[in-house]
Image (tube, rainbow, N blue to C red; front, side, top):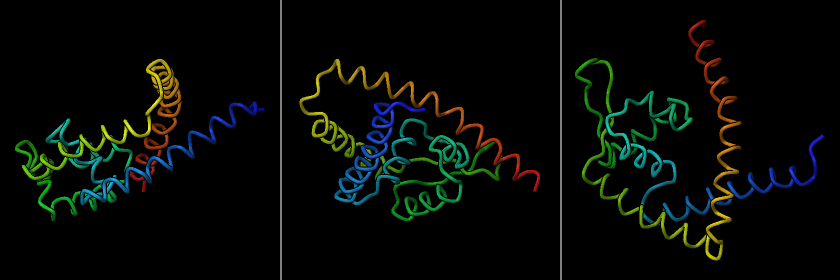
Length: 158
């Protein structure tokens, strides 16, 4: 049986994540984008030239969901698809100069959000929170990876 304190922590984690996603969505909209699009732009800046399948897996998104996001970003001239010299069937994702400019501007917004939501929280508490969240993430990642592998295997068998 889960102890009440642990149940409360799980509730607070889920609720805080929901509220933070909503808050970041609102701030992203003020800059003409969405939290999801911001996430794609940020990932591409760190690892330009990914193909859509690799990016979808990194972001834990269904490939069709990522395709729609990339379609919108491409229409906005923030991302471009380029042919892969090694495999003409594959398209690699790259930021356009406009996309790079937007994501770099959003770094300031990320800093503002962190300053607002963590105001008054000391560094020791942040370090402890990071360690705790890292443990939780590590314990949930294998389950997510196993589900993804099972889904891929089921798709190949169909």
